[in-house]
Amino acid sequence: MRDTKPGPSTDDSQTQGGSNGLIALPIKFPHHPVVLEEQAQRAASIQLRIADWITNFAGSINFVYLHIVPLRLRAA
Image 1 (cartoon, rainbow, N blue to C red):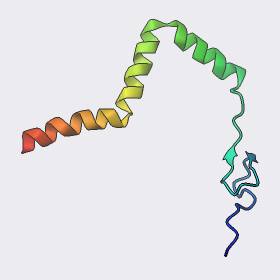
Image 2: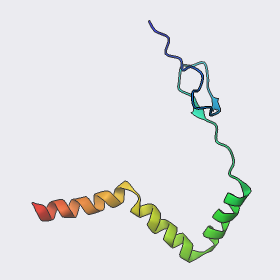
Image 3: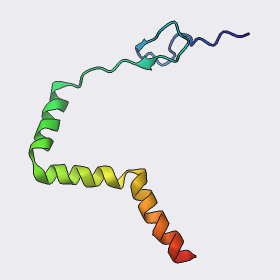
Image 4: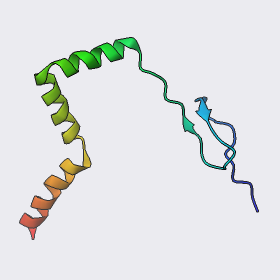
């Protein structure tokens, strides 16, 4: 039987792995302080929170489903 343990990472990312044979995931590093400041500013503005919600929804698979279903019903 072949050994299925993952080898050393080939993309130079730091990973934390175990000896249980599972694939190791990258370590989550904290965001840069400038990024945290930008997130705080966006969270403080209602207008930007709404814009972020719309942007996130428009880029989601639910948005795609919401538009596919009516088009399929209309075409049938």
